Length: 163
Image (tube, rainbow, N blue to C red; front, side, top):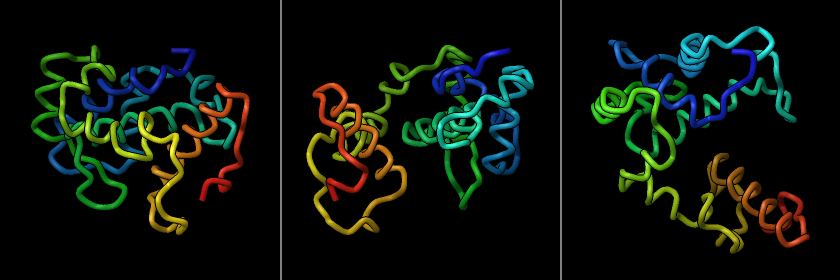
């Protein structure tokens, strides 16, 4: 594949990468296995996002995050992933036809999406002025949400104006 698929297209390959593993894999192992399943070309693997991270690494990483929130992956220890029984069943039933609508079938995912500070929740400032009260993912989500809302309204905030 010469172009990097979107993060939703990584859902099935991430689950496939983990479905037969006896022990957890590192984040990088999962990402590389998923990229191999997708047959990403060298050119696709070299495509970067603005932060300098390869696009496929970012997209696969976000896929893991969303699958975890839906209860399809566990993080048994830092930087390691394992598939849950739910993840196995989801892959068996849907294969690569898994997207955000599929994940929305799970209450944990919907709760995650409705939390203040996640993609659907946060036009409001964060409740605390202490940046350490939030995970990096929550901070990133808040920044992205605020910037998207800002672009839509014509007002763009810097990352820490709201803290």
